[in-house]
Image (tube, rainbow, N blue to C red):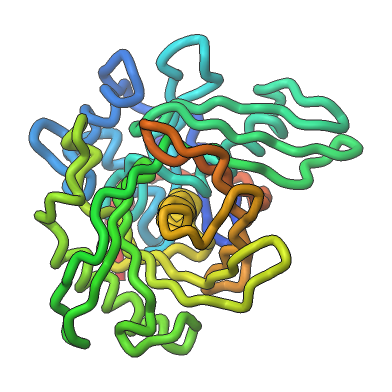
Length: 345
């Protein structure tokens, strides 16, 4: 007797400075739309929000891959889709445990390395290759650095970052704190952890996550969180709780944890969030031309960020780090599996 047919999905997994990124290139259901932004809107649904996506085959696959037993509450990934035009190599829809996101710096960095290592983008044995990627918030670039045929690092150039509000008072259980807002492909709120009586370390991580969720909820309708052109880019995506470290010879140094979605936290220093920090530091005069930010994560990994230029559209930033492959997987769904969507603890 033949076994019931199973559905199989293949992924390639990376981590960028500790934050996972699960790449799904094949086996996707049809996603309507002519652009990545159109496909993102189709995934989210009419009048929806990235954290309340439309249910259907695509979202069933997201849940299958992000939730236990095949994933975990800290999993992150992306569906590779066609780019908007020949000016980019690929497009992507980013996802996490609660839905979709409009930007993801660490995912862009992982995708750049993957595209080079898979041979999708030609790269020299020694030198750099630029991988152009269309994401829901625009076109971004991952410059992959190579030596002797191996990848040594990757640099992410983001869409322009706009500072949209400063010193916004937010009432929290620790008292009222002032936060800054910046759009860096997604909207981030920044607050020094010390204002909440916290330090950025693993011992205080549960309290940091609780504070991030509280601040994000309080800012849900703030005007500074609204994107001027696209409602799907509006709303606070992440809250960056940061603290200063001793300056390096190259510039300032900070440690942060970024809390996003419903209490998920970034294991990396957060790529798009680093863009937000760079724009705010530049506006404050704390990051001058030619200087760089050493940005450390809760896991002790580091991104290095710099301001390329400041234009009428916003601050152009670049963030450098590393991304490494962690595995290749063939996930299956048995027709009699009683947890077809997985579960979250």
